[in-house]
Length: 383
Image (tube, rainbow, N blue to C red):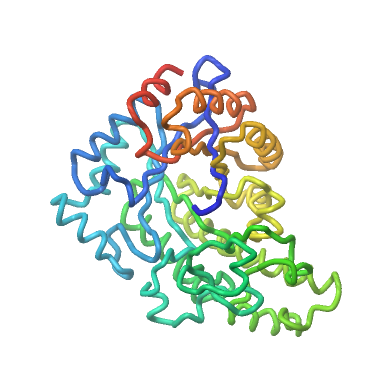
């Protein structure tokens, strides 16, 4: 989650986290040093840690960089097969049953638009690099694609798919559906990387592209926009109305993907929850990465969002959380806490926990499971 400020709400200013509906979660990455999905013992330990730390939600990464870490019938499953071979069973099935027996919800954490550094992803093999989004110079992102502007800007060194390409949208929807169909004990889907690439410094829309970088110029996305408006976003935007049309179009490509996934999941069962990890600064998410998560809450597209706010700056934390909670709409706002930044100093962790909890968010999540050492577990067990 490069350069993203991730920050889930932990509640300390009260007598514990016992108020109605408050949830405490943890992210479990496929890159976990504890290799959660590679043995029954690792799964049993995860459940035990969650019980001790009063964690009632697990965000289990099952699709990352175009690789399926689950029993997939349509995507590259070599990672999954390696897990099963080492564990001797499908540990996702085992984890879901153990979690249910212990009243812990488990959500399928799916990385959508980021392919990491996977130039050999199935979708690229099938459709070519045309499915990747591009900046306004028609350059794709990624570590293997340096360009002159890297002297002046920071950009995510990851390959990103173009959500405005309907082939991409169709494939990603099928990922979410397949996971839930194969593992009905999941409590829902947790979406990640549902945005365009981040840049530093960031610009607020296409009017300012000469001062920075902006993405969404995938070939199919440009083609569809031209068909709809008759305008070329590379050379034909002449006034504020044109710029807003193009920016709104890109924003809608992200929103449409989220809406379509949520609709399919809810059709399977209205009890399934759909959430997303989002950029905590709503204005930046909206204008730079075209992630309109306040609208997703307002329209009830998502059940809740989790603010990705990894920071040691408590003042910034307070301002971002306070502003974000105003966007609850018809959903809920959880706050993410970057424990990996603070695991060597429990006092810093405690102070930020207090800061966040005093603002009364709807839930918290911790990044990540690997950073829950004995001191942190003991601390969480007592509040």
